[in-house]
Image 1 (cartoon, rainbow, N blue to C red):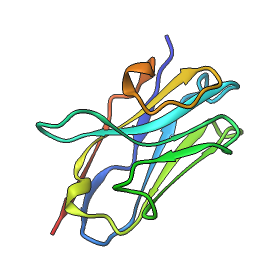
Image 2 (cartoon, helix red, strand yellow; image 1 turned 180 degrees about the horizontal axis):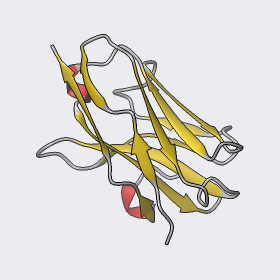
Image 3 (cartoon, one colour; image 1 turned 90 degrees about the vertical axis):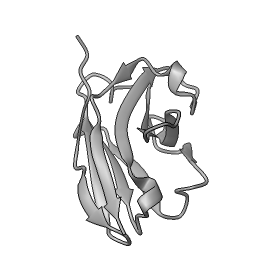
Length: 124
């Protein structure tokens, strides 16, 4: 079975920085597409940032653009999300997900493989 695992969440204060990591030995192979999604209580799961295999095509949600940076190191089988200037509105369970294919998509329903999530809580 293919496994995806996130790490790096925690309790931080407004304005802090935080880096999430995701490892998956299989799904970092070509031609995988990967993304970070988050879900807060009472809200739909939404795409935070998605990236294609080579890192040339990247999507950011409007709410995080300019503050978050997605990257991947395929040689280390790792996906990253660098979070800067975090806000209370960023509080959510963050999930790493992956799918096979060449087309980048921000729809979480398209992604086939998911981690269990890592909680990020931002206090005022």
